[in-house]
Length: 168
Image 1 (cartoon, rainbow, N blue to C red):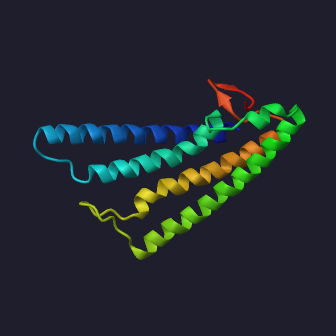
Image 2: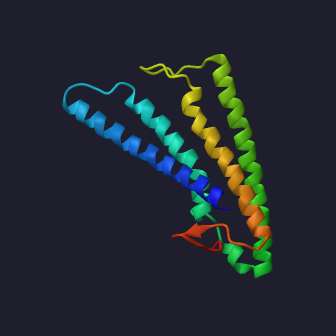
Image 3: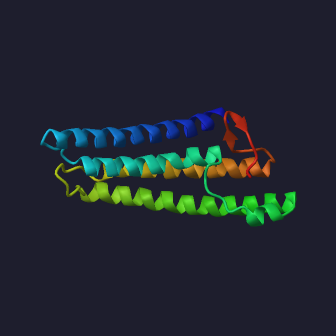
């Protein structure tokens, strides 16, 4: 589906934006130290950006076939066995990502309800930097479902360089 591909791409772009933000925060902190001052909470903000980048990058990486796979057993199986193993692995991945999404959402809701604030120099409501975790895991659930449907229909899910490819 084109709309899902765009959603995975958007997550990848947002992940990249947060990586650039990390870089900018580090450069700003270096320049500030050379000038004898500091950027308040730059370490804390960089950590939030790193978490956001990681979680938002999950669905994009799955769609690009960039997740790590131990393929020794996979390559030893015949084609039909490979598809069965791929379906089972995708169902397990779907279960794990759904569990993570559910409990991430509960965690963020709890932070919001209790008014949790960061303990750094700048008090940040904790639900704000936690939201990308929920978004990333929810889109990962969608991507896992999309992958499962693609596998069951015999269609490739992963794409590389703009072309659909089968998993290695």
